[in-house]
Picture 1 (cartoon, one colour):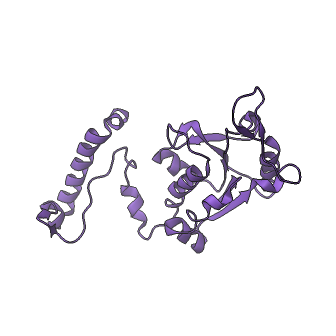
Picture 2: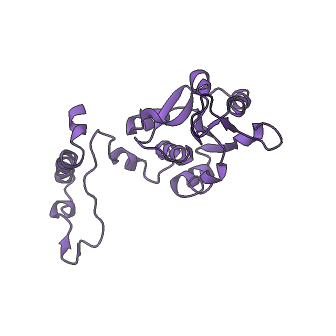
Length: 226
């Protein structure tokens, strides 16, 4: 898989993409993630990528030219399945969307900044808009790193145990059951006996029951979708 991320502050993406599962997946050649500085196509000697908003609203707006030229440069090299704009008013990121995108070959992630991007980019270049929540952050870099992480961990070979992702929260529409590790007792707090029983059938039944109980308590709206 190839993921190209377009940003006006690419330095924000250096650490999130260099470590843990994503970093190891890059080192293994499972995914190729490239971060591109939109100032490459900035305007004038100072490589400006933003300008004042028509209509007089407060805040600067990302210009169309740097985004257009960067996307054209990339599309000259390969075909992209999706050009995704990270936006607070896009469709809310879910595990299902991450699963879907993990099956693609080439993705572009566009990080907004300032007040937003010229709307013509959204009308003519972007194929999909994704939000990581109903709130606003300073730019799309952290959401892009989050989206990339949610995708990469699903790629074959990214996790040491590939079955681990199958038991993640939301894969079956529920939050996951509680998990425990050694020691079996600490400070008088014990691991449930069923998990120490060695009986896979009983353990699975307990996990299913706990997933339902926790979903009902923590995210009851999910049960309505099942």
